[in-house]
Length: 143
Image 1: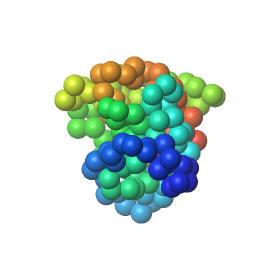
Image 2: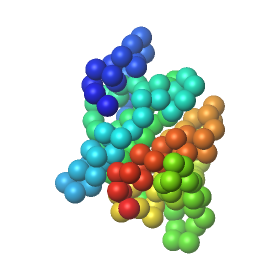
Image 3: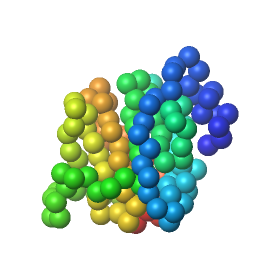
């Protein structure tokens, strides 16, 4: 996605403030690859928005914002053996772990080599969003 497309998607809305992860170089490169594959929209009213700061490690859609962060540590609530949900879409499969934080569902990929976190406000259906993002996350070879 080009910077111009991001700006066009977010006219009239302020940038979403997001804490940027600080991974090592190899993880950063994988996250940069993911950033090139993320969709402009997650459907309906969930168009891509600018983030503050701008970084290929983060993305946001809609208002209230659905926020993706790449290169995060494993969710501290996750314990080996916890249930994960396998989501398949467009021939791709990603295993997601669900946690609840501050009235948001937080989905993460603790079984991946590079960890992604998707924070979803209660207003939206997380499973539908995971299906829309699974091809991008799988295609970025984060596993």
